[in-house]
Length: 150
Image (cartoon, rainbow, N blue to C red; front, side, top):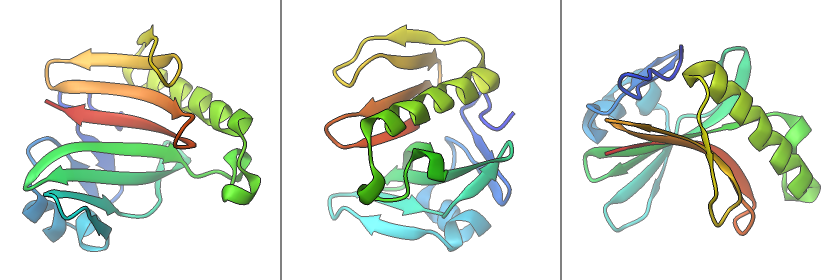
């Protein structure tokens, strides 16, 4: 299991990202040390450790900190079937990616709840430590699985 349903921790080939990881500890880890950083200049920082192979699927990963606190991480399939750039973008491909994310999440966490949202129906899980959901953002043109900690 790559997403621990008891804690929300994500197990990557190069380490684990869990709620108790601070930004300083993350940056000192093998996964954090080689991450690209987008500093939002408002206390929020987004880190991109590159593509990761999970369950024989290739995912892009984003890890988000507010100050030292881990807020969330996001995953999205990095697969040419779902587009490789804005030049071959389509809503149909993004919805297919969301469906693939949903299947992967059900394998990871079991059946979830399908709830309406402004972005369309989302597969959603609520846990004492936080929440997980799979979404397609039509306005932003992106699809991802998000794990957010409380």
